[in-house]
Length: 111
Image (tube, rainbow, N blue to C red):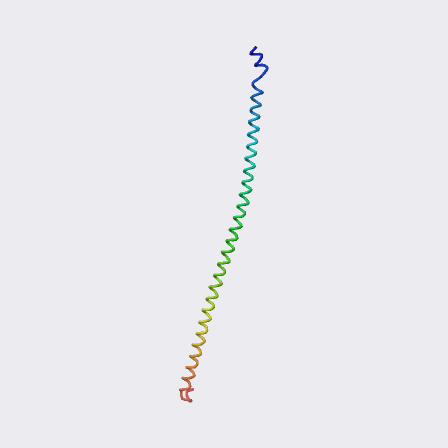
């Protein structure tokens, strides 16, 4: 009777069914994890793009600050050159005036 009962309910189909169920649930879990990974990857890509944009903006701002500082330095140098030029013009005028005064003191026959 036992043998007949064992033959009626073979162990193999039940085991196969359990394996298929586990495999299906594992496949579902793998699919879920793959979708999560894709979502994370997409979110990371968006974050990377955002960070790259920020870096580019910071580079532009740094370049603008560098140019502004350079322009400020050039304006300062220009102002200094202008002051020196005015001082040289004044010194030249003074030398011309001294020359004229010295020439005026010379006897006319030497001039």
